[in-house]
Every structure is written in structure tokens, then in C-alpha cells.
Amino acid sequence: MPCEFKITRRVEFSETDMAGIMHFSNFFRFMETAEHAFFRSLGYSIHTTQLAAQVGWPRVHAECDYKKPLRFEDEVEVQLLVREIKERTIHYAFVFRKLGPHSPEETARGALVVACVSKDADGKMKAVPIPREIADKIEAAPQEKLA
Amino acid sequence: MPCEFKITRRVEFSETDMAGIMHFSNFFRFMETAEHAFFRSLGYSIHTTQLAAQVGWPRVHAECDYKKPLRFEDEVEVQLLVREIKERTIHYAFVFRKLGPHSPEETARGALVVACVSKDADGKMKAVPIPREIADKIEAAPQEKLA
Amino acid sequence: MPCEFKITRRVEFSETDMAGIMHFSNFFRFMETAEHAFFRSLGYSIHTTQLAAQVGWPRVHAECDYKKPLRFEDEVEVQLLVREIKERTIHYAFVFRKLGPHSPEETARGALVVACVSKDADGKMKAVPIPREIADKIEAAPQEKLA
Amino acid sequence: MPCEFKITRRVEFSETDMAGIMHFSNFFRFMETAEHAFFRSLGYSIHTTQLAAQVGWPRVHAECDYKKPLRFEDEVEVQLLVREIKERTIHYAFVFRKLGPHSPEETARGALVVACVSKDADGKMKAVPIPREIADKIEAAPQEKLA
View 1 (cartoon, chains in turn brown, yellow, red, cyan):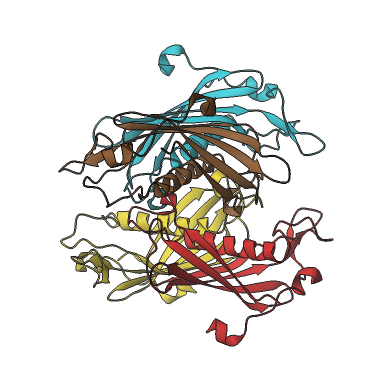
View 2 (cartoon, helix red, strand yellow):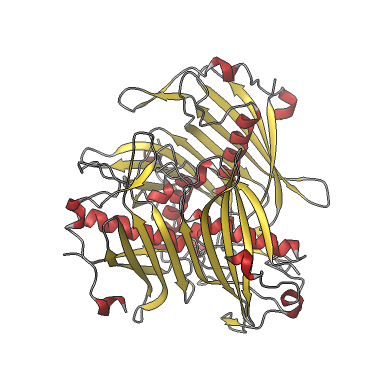
């Protein structure tokens, strides 16, 4: 069962800031992009209408450790790893690697914790168990991958 | 009746790019911010639930002429002017001025054309007449202001 | 000589707004992304250090006409066309088409005018002739493509 | 000596996403905005040219815990607290509170760790001691504020 996924992106001009590097907030957008591509790879849109229950995935925690800057036109691989899948949350780890003529260079590590929610009659979000169709398709990555 | 409105904003670090200036796409976000503040000044949210009919305001045209760059921490005044109010659209003009120790300096001019729409039963957007409660509160700016 | 270029992108979650569609300012970021990919296709980075003269390309005009909304996960083709190349400016036209099971559907048209500048000793930007190495590689698209 | 600072902001339309709430990445932009306003309150720009040594402040760590969503036009107070000031880094904590007719409601908590760097002759960033002029103006918040 899938426990990881990789996407590749090129840093765009509008993602840089006056320090000449990718703005730190954009690493979080890249993590989310990897998460959504991971879901598509399972056969689902994150904004799915394919399931019996309409669920959403708000973030409850996000973090990133920055090691080296990314610059305009850098090609970066974002590796998503499932750290843990619980009844109502999924914990993801991310590794950012700059691609290039040499071997990939790790530039950052991140994490997201997302909750599975549905809206009740009033439109209020409430945590609910992850639908079985999805939970059955994901597993936590082995410990050595997460080290 | 109101035909103009002004807001003041300070350029944020995340709005700059590696050229050291505010990214050109952010001028459009500033125009929209002025438009929404203008609506609040009339007593409405742009995302109003106060009207009989639930309407939205998608953009049908946007443009900007850039004269001088804006930089991090610049204070900028965004002046909104109603150029024309038609049955189903509002045409806005915008003037960006950098504030500072000297007299304000014009740095850009922009325009937005927004359509008044409602969603039909299928969720499709359809242009509709601007609700009278709003149309009655706005008028076009006099020609000399728009020059 | 090249007079056009196409890129394909998927609309990301962070590019949508609460109206459920891609925020209108992001169309300008997509245009710029196409422009930069076009430059790479010519063998240059837009932020080049490969030329004798270090030049930059600030935007002097930007515009967009919106016909249909783009939504999360839509695949969109952005076609760049060189409308005109002058001594110090390049005029680009853009056509946005939503890809899908049916034939591509035009959703928006845009335009950018960019100036070629270099910085003088004080760091002030000044319009300069487009370096010959670049001007010699680009030509205006034939009229029928621009219609 | 200052150990905290507060700013107030209104959530803009372009900061929301199709889930109808402020996109999670924008909380990090708000934290940075509070940090830069804090620096201005000390008499410095974060991008200062006022100091003997030209220093920058890249982020080495960023995190956020999300409790309740923020929505379009919500007014939010961002409280910055200095958690720790070390020789080469500053650790900030942030509390987000939604303002309104009732008492402020905590919606998120965040943290940033920023390093003080200067560029060496090659343009490479290198961690350096925080300039005394700045270090002397900041102190860690008392423990009870950080609880």
C-alpha cells in the first residue's frame, strides 16, 4: 500500500522574495501540492465527490525546518511520507531536495497533520473517522524512511 | 453618493520578489482590497448575506499600468474611483500613490470590471442586475477625477 | 524563429478563493510562468547572467479578460504569443484553455508588456535596447494566430 | 525592554481558499508581518541599512497549530512574543485571536526561529551574532506570558 509519493516543481519568480530566495511560506504550499497529488495517485481528489460522505481535510499542524534556500528556477523534489494514520488524522512528513547536476541536496524538512472533517447541518466542521475507502489505501512509511 | 474610496497599505516582505520590488500580480490584490473596503463603507460585505438575492462579483476584466516600482515597507494609497455603473457591471479605476515625506507620487493605474452574478439551481453563475440597494448607493465619479 | 510557446499547469488549492475558483490575480502569475519557460526554451533564464549586459524585464502593462472560471485541479494550457517586439519592449498575448475530456475550452485572454531595463550606477532602472542575442531569437506571431 | 508586540489585520478575499477559510500558509505571512512591524517599533527596518553590519534574518524553523478557522473579513490580532534571544537566533511565539463583538477568541498559535546572517564575499549567507544595537532592545517575555 502506498506510504510515499514524490512531485517535482520548479521555483517560480512570484514565489521568490526580495532576499532572492523562495519565500518560506511557499514551502507549505508545496507540501499541500504534494499531498493533493498523492491523493490523486490513489484515485481520489482531495475535494472528492466520489465518497459516500463528503469530507474535508483542514490542517491542524504545520511545520518546516529550513536548511538551505531555494532560488528562482531551482528544480525541487518534494517527497511525501505518511508518518502515521490514525482514526481521524493523517500525519505527513516531507523532505525537500534540490535537483541538479549533482546528487539531490536536502534543503528542508516539513510536516503536516490533517484532520478528516465533515460539516454538520449548521455548516460547522466536526472531526470524523477517515472514510474506509481512503484509510484502506494508505499505510505508514517504514521507520527507516522516516529517519 | 459615494463615487470613490481610499485605503492605505504597507508593502509586505512576502509581496516582494527577487527583483526587490512588489510583484506585479499583487497590485491586483490591492485593487480588490480597496473594492471590498469600499463595499464595507457602504454598509455591505462583498460576500453579503444582507440582501434578498445572494450575488457574487466575479472579475471580467483587470488591467494595470506600472510607472514606478513599489518596495518593501512603502506606504501606498490605493484610490478607487467608480468609472461607470451599468445594469450588470461596475467599472472601477484605481490610482496607486506612494506616500512619504514628499507629496504622494503616482506609481500605477489600474482598472477592474466586475459583473454581478447569482448562481442558478445547477450552481452555474449567471449575470443579473445589480441589486437596487447597492446600485442606489454608488455613482460614477465626475470626469475630472477620472482624467 | 519562435513566436509562441505553451505550458500546462494544474490549478492548486492555494490558488483558489472562497468563491471556489482560481483567484483572478493568479492568471497573471501563470502568464509570467509561461514567459519564463519561453525564455528557458530559447536557452536563457529571464534572470540571466549569460549576457554581456545584465538586464531585467519589469512589467509596464498587464491585462486579462476572464471568460470562464478555472477550478481546483483543472488542467490549463497557457499559450504565449509574441505580439510585437520593439527596441525596448516585448508585447505578449496569452490564451488560457482548460484541458479535459472534450476539446480545449478558452477561459481567458491576457497580455503583458515588458520593458528591457538595466540598472545604472545608482541602482535606478533605465530602459535599454533588448540585447541582440535575445532579439534575434524572437519574432512576432503571424496575424492569424493573434486573432 | 520590549518583549511583545501586537498587530491587527483583516483577512482578505485573496487569502481565502475554496474551503471558505484563510489558507493555512497565510498564517505564516501574518507572523512575518508582525515580526517586521515589531522591528519598526524598535526603530529599525528588518531590511535595515541603519546598522554598521548589513544583516538578514532567514527563517530556520516555522510552525503553526490551527484551532479554529479564520474567514474573509475577520479581524485578527497577531500577538508576537519573544520566547528567547540567543547569540545568533531569535525565537518568537505568536498567538492569533479573532476580534469581534465578544471577547477575543484564540484561533491559532505559531512560532518562528530566525537566524541573523550576513553575506560573505561570495554572497553566501553565514550566521553571525545579532548586532548589539538590536540585541540590546529586545528581551524574552516572562514565562507567564508564554504559557
